[in-house]
Structures are given as structure tokens and as C-alpha cells.
Amino acid sequence: MKISIIDYGAGNLPSVERALRGVGAETECVTRPEQIAAASALVLPGVGHFSAFVTGLRERNLTAALRDAIARGVPILGICLGLQAMFACSAEAPGEPGLDLIHESVQALPTNVKSPLIGWNQLRRLRESILLREIPHDVHFYFAHSYAAAATEPHTVAACDHGFSFAAVVEQDNLMAVQFHPEKSGDVGSRVLRNFLEWAQ
Amino acid sequence: MTLARRIIPCLDVDAGRVVKGVEFAGLRDMGDPEELAARYNSEGADELILLDITASRDGRATFLETVRRVAQQLNIPFTAGGGIRRLEDGNAVLRAGADKVTVNTAAVLRPELISELAAQFGSQAVVLSMDVKKTHACGEVFICGGAESSGRDAAAWAREGVSRGAGEILLTSIDRDGTCSGFDCILTAAIAAQVSVPVIASGGAKTFEDFLAVFGEGKADAALAASIFHSAEHSIGALKTYLAGCGVPVRLSR
Image (cartoon, rainbow over all chains, first blue to last red; front, side):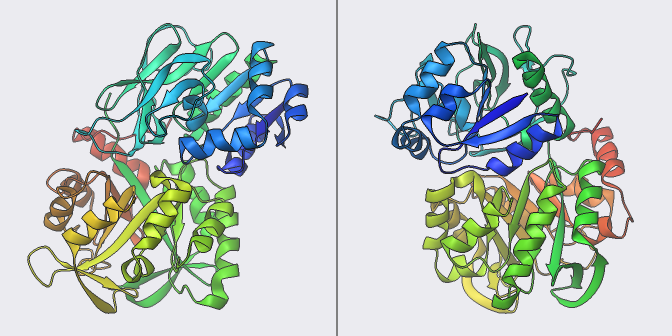
């Protein structure tokens, strides 16, 4: 199956691409709205600043195409900042609207814990998950971020704790997203990508 | 659910080969970077750091090629650096496949470099590397591979680096590096108490107990070592099993 990876002008696409190919996906990097419109499955990776991210999408006229695709039911996986972009807004860039597919906000990690959160952590499962299917509960995933969305049900299927309980895995109809980096999380990370691929097919 | 303490092997490379020095001098060939990277990735390393220790202008292309080849071997986080002077140098390393870039001498000489990199790539992609010698209570930052004193106090520099946007501190004790006498836990704890970002301890690792100490009294978030892993004296898996047995939260590979 072909996965279209959205290239908004920054971010570490090669490692996401390599990891997806490693689990058997065919990949293409897309930069134009018509490519998003033609995609059968999408991955939205992201690192860096929320503002640069949403501006990058907007300047390439990708925001509307992305919304349309998600509304049509095209499977999408957001990674890290790609998860945060699904929310209404972020404290990292007040005034810059997110995609608002989940009508809540992204906030800074509390000041009583180390920030950025960098390292491997375990998840707390809240309900049955497609992305975490057949993955043991005690494994670690790699996180690298300074902002996060509060773990709220029903969209959050797995949470992680770092000063507060934040959304680590989000699943809402055809919208899937992870705050950690599956492409950097060793073999269990590959399993998450494989689960997405199998579900999208 | 606890954030795991990280074990990070470091590859010091010169002209495409992994080398190891003793107290920042005297190089010895330790192998091929790709082979070592693949081995550490499968042994359960939590991250890999690749440092260009010659960092000569004419060696840049060779180093970027090494970054590219090593990145292909990894499905764990990957930091690269050495000789990063400008925003473009950082961009080149990240484009070659690294997830984070580490800066050292050039950041001391021009601290704005940290702010520029953090603004462009985010704090999570910027590691401030500092080589510290105990000249007074907390230590002094040395530059140019430990050859020159910068006159900066280690704690003050760590704080400034973080306020400028560094997302991690890679703290190397020059006094301990290559000596196999254990991490400098006092120095590491002193710096960790000064900053709100993770601290990676480096320099002096020899035994499993050294790692236990640096995660305990040293308050380190991660520990880096090179020669003890390259020489296969210790496997990362065995080290993590030991640490887990001592109650240190680690990621055990499966």
C-alpha cells in the first residue's frame, strides 16, 4: 500500500520514510494539495515549532486538502507535532489555529518537570487501541517534546505521565496520532507503523 | 511508568573511522562506524551519538557521508556534531539523517548559535556539549577539544545554554575522560541541579557500578560511554539488565 508522507518544508522525513518502507509500505513525499486529494493513506510527521508547522501547511495550501481528506475518511497518522496539529491550538503559538479536528488545546509541559521531555517512557492504556494492537503493555517509546495535550477520553487511547497525564496515542475514527516517535522507537515503533498500515489497507 | 535512564554509546570519528583518545589525546582505531552503529542499535542502545573529532573544513563531506550511512543503520534517536559553527552546518547534519545536533566550541565563542539552531529546529534537536575541567568548585568550560580554557564557569554556561534553547546538556568531565575511573558524579549532580533539561553524563565509565552511581548520586538522565562498548568489554544488554536489577528504570529490549 502507498503511504503519502506530507512534506510541509521541515521535519525529519527520511527516517519516517525509511521506517514505513521497513514495514512494507510504498511511500511518497507529497507537497501539493492535489497529491493529498489523491492519497489513499497519509502520514503527517513533524518536529520543531507549532507555528512553523501550521504556517508551512498553510503556505503550501495543504490545510484544506488535509481537512477534506480526513473528512472523507482517508486514514491518517500524525507523529509528534503531527499529533499536536490535530488540536484546536497550542500554547507554543497562541493565535495560530491548528486543524481543530480535536477541539482541545495543546499546553506546555509543567515547570516542575524536565522540559523538553526527552527519552523513553511507557504508556498507560485507557482503552482498546488499533495502533498498539499486540504490543506488550510495558514497552518503551521515544518522546521528544516540550508541549502536549491533556489525555482526554474518548480520543486518547493511551496516556503518558510527565508532570501531567498527556495524550500519547489518539484514535478518533480514521484519525490516528502518536506523541512519541515510532520511527525512533526501535522494533516496537515499527510495530505501531505496521499496525497503522494493516488497518489502513 | 517511569522515564527510562538512557544508555548512549558514542562514536568519535576521524576520517570515516571510529577512534578513541585518552584524556583528549592519542587516537586509536576502534572500528567501522556503520558496523558499530548497527550492533548498538540491536543491542538495545537508547540513542547514538556521532562526533566528528577532527572537524576540519576539508573533512566535512566525509563526516556528512558517515552521518548518512550511520543513520541508515538506526531506528533509535541519533545525535551528530563536531565542528558545527553555523546554522547551515547544523542543517546539513540534520538533513543527512541526524535527529539532533550537538554544539560545543562554536557555541562558547558565539552563544547566539544555540538560539539560532533552537529557533529553526526546536530545542529537542539541540544538544549543548560542554567539556569541563575541575579548576575550581564547579568546574570550568574548555573548548577546542579540551585544549583551551574558555574562562566560563560550567554552571553559569549550562544555565545560559538552556535559556538560549538547548534541550539537553552533554557534560563531559575532561579529568575523567578515558581514565576508566568512573563518572564525575559530583560535577554531574551539580550541573543537573542548575538546569531544567536532561543531562547526559560522559567521561570515565568503566564498570556497571559507575553507571549505577551516575544515575543515583550523579542525578544523570543519561550516560554516555565509548571505549568500554567498542571493545566489547561490556554489552549494553548486560549493563541494562544489571541496572534494572538495581532498581534503575531502563528500557529492556525484547
